Image 1 (spheres, one colour):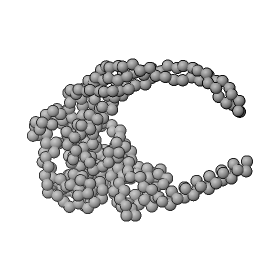
Image 2: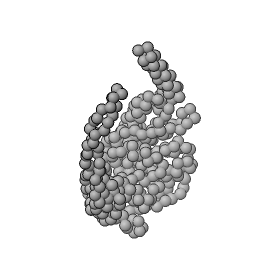
Image 3: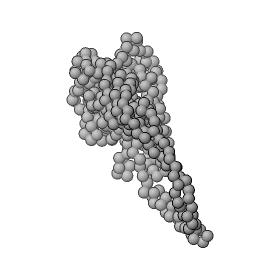
Image 4: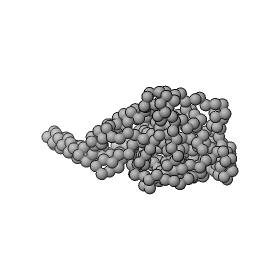
Length: 365
């Protein structure tokens, strides 16, 4: 656990917390409100992109990193930092009990974050509504989620990458053409002649170049959640990024990144490669395309370390653990799909009954 930071209330001295969707800290003890100061011009400059080559070579200025005390989860490996008055006894990612740690890790400082826009109540309503749309989900789990313990507000670490790419490709362009021929078929036992049209492809070798400048390619900087979860929370409105200020973390926790910059950059290039391949296909043109090879060069590579808001729930229901995540900006929900054995059995029985009725009607007709 990191050193616990406190934001004392000016009126009573109790701990303040950040109010999602607002730009102020509130005191749950006396109701006092304190406005979060606006970012100064020099803070806004911190949103500038950092040179990727310098970071990979460990040449970033010392001011861009800091030592943090963190607590690794023994189950999922999440590296969680604690800010404000939050005290956690279970991992917010998998509900595993954790012991307060004392290890220190040097981490690149976050440059920006998107503050929470949804309150815990709004996030819970979004999660329960999502469960309600899953017809085969157990009703008991939905009620348990509605009345269960509070969701945890987590700032999840991400990397963003920019790059100017130039790609050379080789492949084949396929142009369709059509021919007709006469075939003999039997209709009611009698031969008849019909004309059929057949489609063919004429392939032509091609090569060329495409170029694309990428801005803010987003890569999650943690292994604590399945990639399908985090991809399902997209899209994020990154125009809402604001310069990092600890006040936004009051009452919340922040996860330290466990995906290093080099590993994330490789994933970022995979994301770029998918977009580049689409550019190549469009550049080849024709009716069909074959891409044999793409060679890409990268220039002006830069990155940012940012934090994005996620409401998280980890429940144990009937001996099984379920995890759900809610985008703290948009309310999109992802999670482990639960199944009700009784609902599935009921659906099977209904389907068999309907099939039997249909067969009976068809037989008597």
